[in-house]
Length: 552
Image (tube, rainbow, N blue to C red; front, side, top):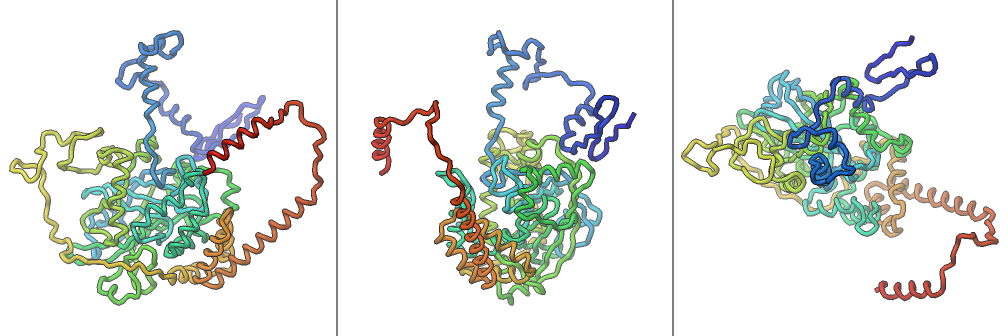
C-alpha cells in the first residue's frame, strides 16, 4: 500500500481499483479538512442567545416559523450580516504577524516600537486592490495597497502605503474626483477609460503616478513580491527633541517580481494574490519585508529645488541616506477573515510618540477621511472592535452603538475633573517648533521625465510601458487619445513616439482584421425560423411614439 503524505501541499490517497493515485491539493483547499482534524467531535449547536437547538427545529417544514427560534435567528442574522464595503480598497485579504527591530535607530526616533534590537511587536497587515469591488479580480493593472497596524505599548501605529513610492495628486480636493473617475460609470455601471484619461489629461500632475502604473511595477506577481511605500514624508524626533524627515519603505525579501498583462490574464484566477499569500503562510513559507527609513536633515531641505513633502515626487539621490529599522514577518493566517480583516480599520492619524507625522495637506485630509469612512462602515466605536483595539486605552469617549468593551465603567465622563479620571502626559521631547508648509499647485513634468529616464531605461521595458498605455486607450474618444499622446510627448519625445507607433500598429491590425472579415462568405437566410414572430407595425409605431416622448 502506498503511503499518504501530508506536508505543506497535501497529497491525498484516492482509491482507484487496488491502486492509490496521489492528488495534489493546495493549502487553501485543505482548510475544512484541517478543521475537522483539529476538532474530532462536533460542538453542541445553539442559537445566538446560547439556547441549544433541538433536532426537530433543524427543519422549518410543516411548522410555525415564528415558533422556531433557530429559523428566526438564522434568517434575520443572514439578512444583516454584510456591512458596507470600503469605498476604495474593497477587495482585500490580510495576515497576522510581528515586527522585529534589527538595527539601532534611536538617533532618529524615540518611537518605542522601533527601538530595542530584538524587540517584537504584534501586527496585522491588510493587502488590497484599489478600484475593485468585493469579489473583483486581483490581477488587473492598478495600485495595490498595504496597511500595517502595529500594536505598540504607546498605542496603535498605522502605516498605510501602496506599491509605488509616489502618489497621483497632492491637492486633497482631487480625492473625490480621482476615486470616482476610476470607479464605475454611473450610467453604464462599467469601468470607463474615458473618464480616467479625461481626468488625467486635465490634471497633468497625476501622470507621474500613472507612468509607475503603466510600467512593469504596475502589476506585481502577487502581494508577497511587491514593495510598499507610505509615500508621505514623516517628521520624526529622538529623545533629545532633534527632528528629522523620514520616508518609510517596506522592501520585499521574496524578490521583486512583476507580471505582464498577458501573463496575468493567462493565470485565469481572479483570487491569485489572495490564494498565493494564504498558501505561502500555511506552508510556513512566511513572507518577510525589510523596513527602511530614508532620512533627510531638516537644514538640508532648505536648499532643495523641490518640495520634500510633495507626495507626487521622489527625493533625489544624494539628498538623503537610508537606514534599516527591522523586518516585518507574516506568520499566521487569521481563522476568521471577516472578524480580523474586513473589520480592520486603519487611520493615518494613528501615530505614536517619536513620530509626530507628515505636515502636507494630503495627509491632513486623510486623517479626517479615513476616520470618517470607518465611522460610516463600522460605527463610531470601531476602535473597540477586537482587531482595532490598542493594548491600552483610557478615554472619555463612551456610549453609542456596540461594541462598547467596558465603556469606561464608572470613570468620570468629563475632563478636567477632580476625581482621578485619566490625565494627559507631558512629552518633553516633542519638537517645540512647527513647520508651516505652503505648497505650489504649478504643474511640473520633470518628476515623470526622471522616472522614464532613470527607472525605465531598458528598451523592452519602455515598449511594454507604451503597450500598456495603448491598451488603456480601448474605447477612448480620439480627442482624449490625442490629448494623452501630447502630454506623454511633453514628458519625453521618445515616450510619445513609442505610444504613437503602437497606436498605428494597432490600427493596422484592426484594419487587416476587418478586411479579412469582409472577405468571408455571407450566410443566406432563405426561410424564417418557425418560432420567430415578426414585430407588427402597430407595436413598432407604439415604440416609435414612446421614443419620441423619452428622447428629450
